[in-house]
Image (spheres, rainbow, N blue to C red):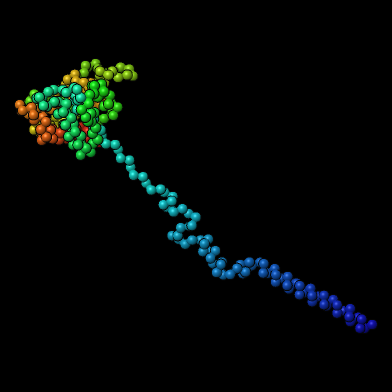
Length: 275
């Protein structure tokens, strides 16, 4: 009976020991889960911290660079150069004045027009010719071509054999030539531009007088001046002496062209066409 009593008393002790062991293992497992960073190598933990907070002065990899955020500034647009339309009078079967048996007005005006185009180009202007060959053009055609181009100035070139000085003309229009209504009268289309045309006449006359050339400022019912819808003048080349062949001489034409270009440049500068 005694031995049996002892056996029965030892069994609960084994149960208590086993329960205590399981409790220790459970507590150790719980303690391991409560600090997860202890399972991560120290080097990896420092790397995450470094990427999470960049140092001062460094740019975040997700932040766009300044070159991506702001496109480069575009250069300012260059304003168009002022246009001068040069109209050598006559042409084709219309010879103009016969200076002498071998010298025709249509050839003199075309030669001067080509020189003037070059001289204006060297001063920064765009110069175009109404005709650049020996062709027939009516005065209506000439005015229509000039009006379609909207030039800053229209210059019609003529020539004479009379040694009366170089003539600079503006259109002669009636005082009541203003247009009433939505349409412009073709015969008085120049009316609203006459003040600018007269200013151009004065500037060019002053430039030619400065070069020592005799000049006359005139008005005339001269087509196509009256039909042009922009500042418009006509220049009549004349010899300085009785020798009419002077109007076709290269040095004389170059002197006239240079003075004309200077006067035109002064007018366009003062009128604001260069801005």
